[in-house]
Image (cartoon, rainbow, N blue to C red; front, side, top):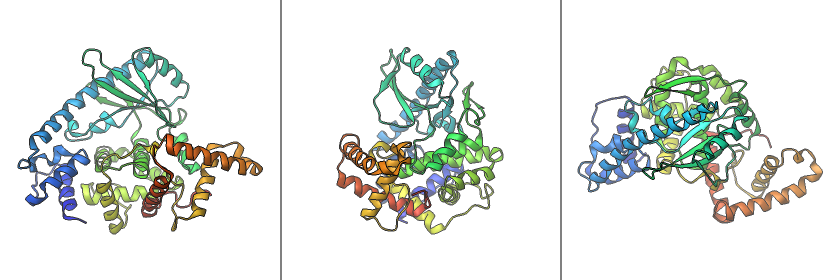
Length: 397
């Protein structure tokens, strides 16, 4: 691992363990250290080391803006949740303020969009009507699990985005994972938990379901966009806060059934090794130290959050080699996803393959705004990630 990565991780680990230890930093590494902190939205933790860099005033201002943004998002969150509750629509608060509350300094966690989840599909149309009649403007976005709204405060002109989820995460090409997620977070099975933040009680997932959601959220970011160190910090702080409330045996069962056990194991081990998660948390779960180093290095190279998931293509499995048969197999899987009913009739497959391919070509140039060559190149890169962590390794063909 590069020296700058080792130094950066030591500083972030000190922040995660509330340690007052000071690390020795080579002055020549400071500009790169500052860039790394910006890429991963962790400037508050690195700022004390950056007083001699030329853009220190800008970085200090950035931290102040992060803290101000925290309270603005808090106001927007309370406003939106209260609006829905006034119309008898209860929603689950995802990430954001909920995870920031687990941090020693909540304001140091960068907040972006507001994410709310409606467990009951019957609430979606009502929520849309309420939001749109209250100044929330729909945003065009091709997505399979949430709607996006933009709200602008009249007095300040400042705007915020709301992601209104009707599924907790987007669809996978491995169908059993979709079925399990839908079942766990259905209104029938999901039990409500309450978290009070700044005197206001929000509905959130119970700790075991919250952890499983976080794993899937990290999976989506790892496969499709950028998986920043911030997600590992979230996981570390949340597990430390709720260790005694989490049913780790159930987490193991769910991960095995959705074939993401390797991901959970490597995340947990990385949080121990690099962020100071206590060894007592799920003590019997471990992963290869060498693979953990490769994983954390990949994370640091990727940055916080990369391209939007709609611009990426990901496979349903991992492959030793990428060839024409690989692309055909993935096209067949995507055909099954696109035509869940018609796929039951093999005689229709040739026509469905052609339609799927034409849709893929259209989306490549009009939705992903890229080329076929680049999309296939990105597919090869993403396959290396699934090989490292063995995600969906035995998925249905």
